[in-house]
Length: 263
Image 1 (tube, rainbow, N blue to C red):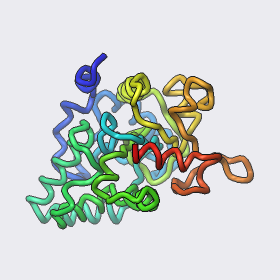
Image 2 (spheres, rainbow, N blue to C red):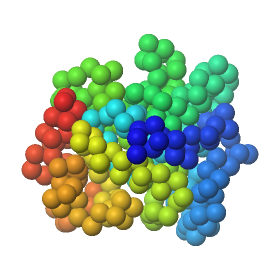
Image 3 (tube, helix red, strand yellow):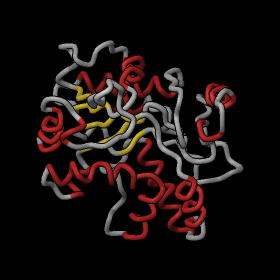
Image 4 (cartoon, helix red, strand yellow):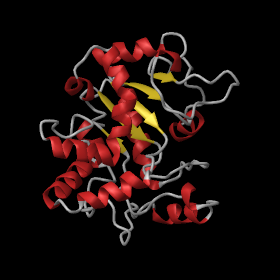
């Protein structure tokens, strides 16, 4: 399978009806996922654990085909003051809102090379950060500094894939049977088959990523050179907070990430 062929399979490719960054009257769940998401939400104990259906899904950031490192996370967070208040504030700036929506769509279909729009456009840059990327920009800034790279070059070499593309305040149950997740699996399988494909960093939910990808042990000889796993805490618990520094990884994991980005 070629890169163009795997790109054409992307279920988000024709998903362009989103023109707003928050709309309480619009259900933005992908049509293929709707039945499962509705069932999921009905069985959550409270609103904060449910997927937010009125904000755009965010399955990808950056370009995984060109990236040296791809971070695998759980799902986008939802913060009311950003995802509602800031989004509605931006609704007052029509041109900015349209540009933001266009950039959001591009990120979902791998048509950009970095996490952010052109930083020379300060308003667009800051607005886009407010509505999603600021979290990862902040998390990755220390890594950028340690790699001794400028931000433009650095963010062209990293990408992010979410296990679940829908936002929530908290998550206490993971699902791996969303129809759109088949593409997530196929995309990562494709990248794993590339001899010069990216290094994957599993930030959260290691067992769930393993279930989706059909990998029982990321440390197996077949996979250990392609994956870096966050280490557990002193009590043996898997990580929940997504910080990235030397102490977050065992052995030489952090150095492997830096070397991959700089390669």
